[in-house]
Image 1 (cartoon, rainbow, N blue to C red):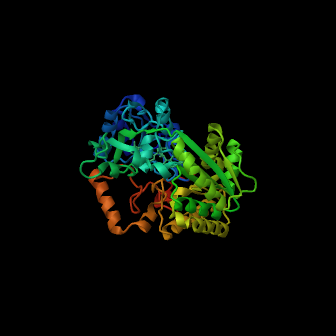
Image 2: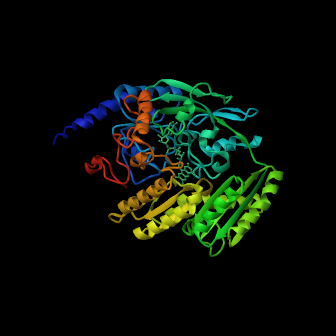
Image 3: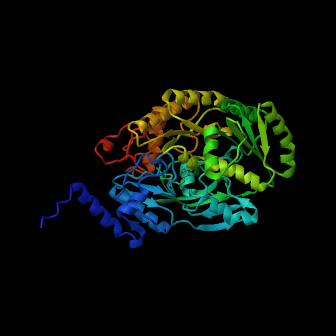
Length: 493
Ligand SMILES: Cc1cc2nc3c(=O)[nH]c(=O)nc-3n(C[C@H](O)[C@H](O)[C@H](O)COP(=O)(O)OP(=O)(O)OC[C@H]3O[C@@H](n4cnc5c(N)ncnc54)[C@H](O)[C@@H]3O)c2cc1C
């Protein structure tokens, strides 16, 4: 019999590490089989795939602490993971690290309905929190389109937004307190239920830190009373730019709708194919506007909105006449990201921000760049916030297509920077936008962020390689090749 080949030195150290980790927790808390690892090798940005050493699924805060301490002690990178819907590669694993999947930490710890707050574990699904309190006429306001699957922990890490964040604010506006396991295993409590901050805003620092400082293990969130009344309209336009100009006009009038979303023709086609959504015939773009609040307030604002839409050049305005019709409009809008899969085998969801007043110009620029590149781009976005989501369609099976799509994505990010906007509105920097950080911040500012990171995580084990332009990465951002990729450590799907 031929003797088995001796394991390569790196395999030896991997095996040692795994045995060590195995002893920390009950057997059912960790997985290292090829099939288990395959399910965690990518997040919503499937252009990247990295196989981690193991998956750990803690059931208690204490188990999270033990694993994080072990990682700190052995300098093993880890990435916290909720549902893995990140569109910026934020929950992509590190090849020498482990994934700490928080899906078993999914309990609603306490509901305090009189004080309108809930204490939850990080693996609670966003929409399930609302489902748990709606009997009391309350809801959790941040509503990413992925809310049926994404977790509160992931929402915090990216300070996620959603259609209704125009009026109600991002995740950061709804978090009162948190218990966090820092990257060195220390457990801290930040913020307070009463909402009155003492000392520096460490809670604010944690929200949006992309899993680089530690793991949120218990979160106190605000609940809001469900609005008494809604008025939802869908206005059709002959072109995207006119729809964009309507947004600036509505905001300029002093109205603050709960949501203002734009979809272009390709997005409408995708939503129609996926969920049977209906849109005005011949419209090149639609604008969804929703007013909410007390019956009196909505009735008072309705007239002004009608007038503004009429003046804005809308070809047709459809008013949702019932809760069911309103739900249909939102179902169409929220289905678009996944529905675009019906139009194209692969796509990149770009996430940049421009000042609202420059929306029309930015959309023209994107159209021009798309034509120059010969690549189709669908647009669906949080128009009220100036938060663009161009969906860049390509076929990754064709040689060079991914690279061309990435180049176009990079040009669009640059347009946002040049117009005085931001490289990300809500999807985070993650892997995807690392090299653009320096387009927005000075070296000193980035250095300051890094010093904060190092104070919490001296070995940079928490989500190593993400966000900072020069961090040792599991893969370079999509816009170029990383040495590890050339060595075959990283595969692109
Ligand atoms: C179809 C679709 C629609 C989407 N629509 C929106 C939208 O409207 N608005 C929006 O903002 N985003 C949207 N997203 C992006 C994504 O859903 C959000 O970023 C979401 O918050 C990620 O949650 P998750 O549970 O999937 O987190 P993951 O993808 O698992 O993780 C995201 C990041 O959070 C970190 N993390 C996870 N849990 C913790 C924790 N407990 N403590 C510390 N760090 C943690 C991870 O390390 C990673 O960096 C969409 C995605 C898809 C696929």
